[in-house]
Structure formats: C-alpha cells, structure tokens
Image (cartoon, rainbow, N blue to C red; front, side, top):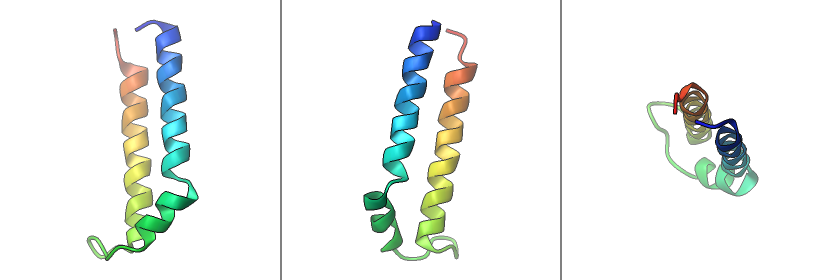
Length: 64
C-alpha cells in the first residue's frame, strides 16, 4: 500500500475514533442493559477501543 493511501486511512480511522468516543454515542451506550456483567458504557468503550486497535493493526501491517 502506498504511504499516501495509508495516511488517508489512518486519518479516517482517527476521525472514526473521535466520532465513536464523542458524547452522543456515549450517551446512547450508557442507556443500555448490562452485557457480560459489565455496565454498558464500559462494554461500549472497551469494544470501540479494541476495534480501533484491530483496525489500526490491519492498516499498518498491510503489505499492499
């Protein structure tokens, strides 16, 4: 993958993280029921965090 395309994908991932961890979605996540014994906000935060790390690894480690 060309460096310019990789940079664009990293910027898009950053913006996705900003949107996913901003107030409106956090308020929606807080209103749910417990998941695996965790409060819904914690489950949402850890899920988004893990997803962002997974996507970051896929972008950085891609060979094409």
